[in-house]
Every structure is written in structure tokens, then in C-alpha cells.
Image 1 (cartoon, helix red, strand yellow):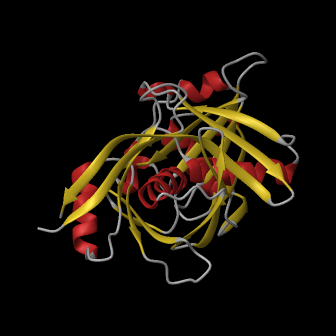
Image 2: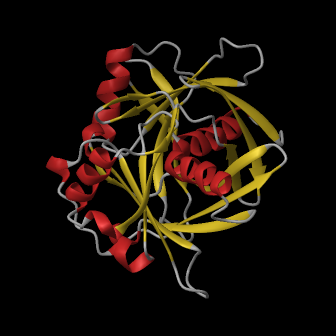
Amino acid sequence: MPAYPFRQVDVFPDAALGGNPVAVVLDADGIDDATMADFARWTNLSETTFVLRPTNERADYRLRIFTPGGELPFAGHPTLGSASAWADHVGSEADRLVQECGIGLVDVKRRDDGFALAAPPLIRSGAASAEDTVAAARSLRIEVDHVLAAEWVDNGPGWLALRLVDADTVLALVPDFERMPFPLGVIGPHPAGGPADFEVRAFVPGLGVPEDPVTGSLNAGIGTWFFGAGIVADTYTVRQGTVLGRNGFVRVERDDEGVWVSGATRTHVAGEVTL
């Protein structure tokens, strides 16, 4: 079987082994779709990516992103982890990269000990219907009047985001995954002086990921919502993965170019994989 360069990168860790790992297969143009899907199921991580030659001349590389349950047009932590793996593989020290993926072109730039991605345009936005809000609340086992707002923030995975009263309420959720109608994200504020400005959790049972440890796409979508609605100023921080024993830390900010989601990236496995 052919061997391919391989990295496993921890994304958004606030401390060692605390983020969301992504498996990255490089120089993957020779791998067929079925093998990609099989390998993603085998790794059993939230996402596994395959880095290919770009088809758009503006892009540095093309990315295909698989969960154990299927392929996604875009996802955040795989974007940052794959950017780190590709740059390390080819020896690039460029400050800016362009990724081609199912949603189009995504700008990526270096930040501190990791990378930042530009939040892509939302495929679906706006307030959720009363029916969808009730269904979401029911799947989270909370009363609908505990939901301060429900907003579509779909940039590929299909996110509906719910704003709850505080971080403790977010942490206390015990979802009913069988009743969850679509990918759900929840966010609530920490008190001043807390570990971050907000606590976030992400639930994607339909894609084989009941709870995602740390989620770039959801935080990008929520950032687009929160900045657009004036809920936050120019920068805020997120803790995610707490219930799963992780210590994910995400920074979300806005500048003249748009909304950016950034975090640390650390490679823990490097070698090759036979497929």
C-alpha cells in the first residue's frame, strides 16, 4: 500500500494535549474517496483531512475534510491544524496562506503559536423559527424560555447556535442526542475574571461526533453573529471542551478584513501512514 506523509496536530490547546486533534494526510492526491472516508472512521477523531494540489491558482493547497460520518465543506479546527501541517511539510514560513475547500477559499494567517482563519460567509443566517428553537431546547433537555436567542450560523456544518444565560448553564447540559435535529452550538458568558469570556459546547451527533471538543467553525459562525448584532466588542475569548476534560482556548476578533478565529497548533505525531 502507498505511504503518505502524516501529521496529527492538536488545535486550540490551552495546555499540552488539551485541544482537539486532527489527523492530516499530506500529498493525498492518489487517495480515493472511499479510502478517505474509511480512514476517517478508523481514526475516530472529530475530523481527518487530506491535503491535495489546489485547483484554484490563488490557493496554496486544497483540503478535504471528513468526520467519522461523512465529508464537510468547511470546518475550523481542521483548517488551522492542516495549515500548520502543510506549512511544516513544505517548509513554508509565509505569514498568509489560502486554503481551497468545499466552501471556497479561506484565508489563514500565522498568530502567536498557531494560526487564525477568516470566518467564511454564512450559508444560512438569521433567527431560528419558534419550532426549531423548541426542538433544539427539547434535545438539550432545557425549557425554551432558558434560550435567550437562537440564530442560524451555518458556514458548512449546519450550525444552529443558542445563547444561554451563563457558562454554568452551558456546562450543566446533558443532551438527548437521539432527539437532536441538527448540529447545535451553545454559548454562555463567564463572570468577570473567569477562565474566558464565554463557554461554548458543540454537538454534532448526526456526523458521528456527539460532542466536539473544540470547534473553529462554530466559533466563527457565532463570532459573525455576535459582532454583527453588537453583542461583543472587537475581541473575546472562549473556553471549550471542559466537560470532555479538555482545555480548549479560542480567540475571536474582528478587524478591517473580517472576523478571525485563532488558537494554538501543536504537532504531536509526525511520520507516514499507509493507505
